[in-house]
Image 1 (cartoon, rainbow, N blue to C red):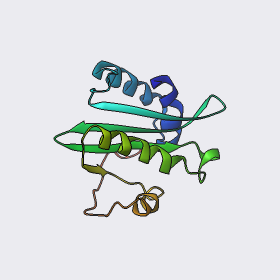
Image 2 (image 1 turned 120 degrees about the vertical axis):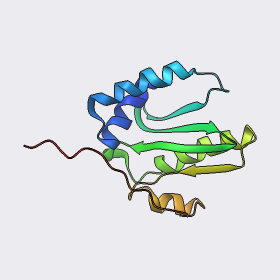
Image 3 (image 1 turned 180 degrees about the vertical axis):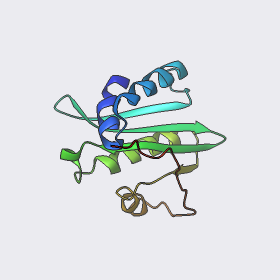
Image 4 (image 1 turned 45 degrees about the vertical axis):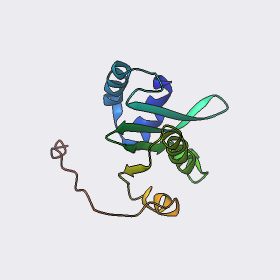
Length: 130
């Protein structure tokens, strides 16, 4: 399943070869239902087209890496792969959920009932010169 996560996550977030590092990290955390990270993949005809992950801890379910391949956007995959971990978290007894939204995902999350409590600025190294 983590192999299926790589392509959609990599393309949706521009991770490139760095996406393989996620596989090693998440594999080390385990795959049991009690593992702190749960991965979800949406398929069309056996092809992975969308992803999400849920991080569990401190009584909160964090929803991250919600992404869909460009050719499959606007078909409800983001909504479905946000709701699936939320329902799973609820079944496990979690009552609180958080997430960070891209500009593209922001309206989806508002329609699902999330509210914006703060903005987070992301910083990184400057792009390499051409």
